[in-house]
Length: 111
Length: 113
Image (cartoon, rainbow over all chains, first blue to last red; front, side):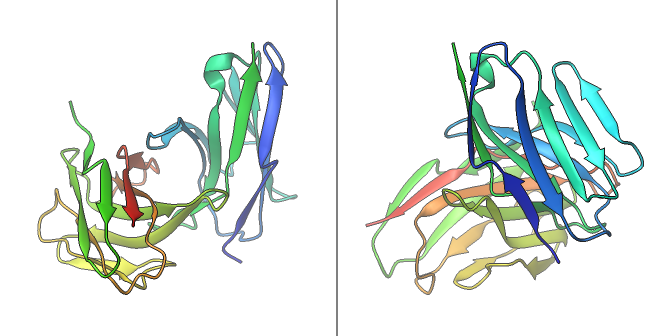
């Protein structure tokens, strides 16, 4: 099944809080799981990515947690800031040039 | 600076007209992509090209056409056969090597009047 299911659709977090976005997949052939951040009117930009041979990757305030057995991965944004307000997309790549994207999560961080 | 340039940024079209969206990259990337973005539907693949003079249909290719005559360029034509063309269109590219990262342009917003 070539789908990536993303939740929640929208998320409101207080400044300094933790934002958590979840994604689930079914195709075990996926070999690369990136997260993209998109600001209004702009193209998405790579935020952080993980491969299935590790369970966690951290870059600054952003962490990906990967659960291979559950076929789930999540993005955690620690100490969320108003500047993090954007739409976030998870994605998965099935070992080819094609990328499968989730439907996106609109994050709003309140000041 | 290296990157992907999409033009125009905004485009208005009357029903029944074909329009062509430009995508140029100077990243020396082999693979290029076109995605369509609609609210609540994420990014859906229209066409992609791994090398010059070759391209494959994505999940929603009907009503669209592409060409890849040069490595740097991957224009998308939205034809009159596309029933609901109003959307935000994104061009992307990646290297042939297994780095994984997709680089996106800033997008083109097409509105059909």
